[in-house]
Length: 173
Image (cartoon, helix red, strand yellow):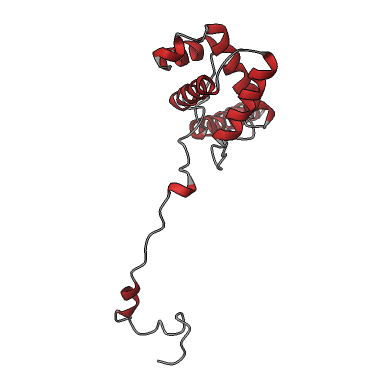
């Protein structure tokens, strides 16, 4: 009798362990891959992506300071919260002009001696890097640039199937 109870207890432990491991494995399989930001890698990628006229005028230290300031901006606006966005759902929109204004203000306060054009180039290259490694998604199009579909006024004259009179606001058949 004792042997049977020991075997049943061992089987129960194994079943519980398998269920727990299977559940966690399933959760990990569904979770988006974790991305790690590496500042030296980002600095190299951004500096390599900058136009030659910008790299001729900016030092690595200036580019690194701008990258760190950009990360500070994202963090200050609660955009780097990995736990909050771990599900990979939802839309987070960051206006480029606000980010640029923040970086220009930081550069002016710290006297980094960079022009707005240089800051814009570094920001653009950094955003491309963040998109390439999967930290951010694709850009949302500018609402002013999106054209509304033009409705054809004659489209309403076509024959409608019976039974749609109530939905059109007309009563009767």
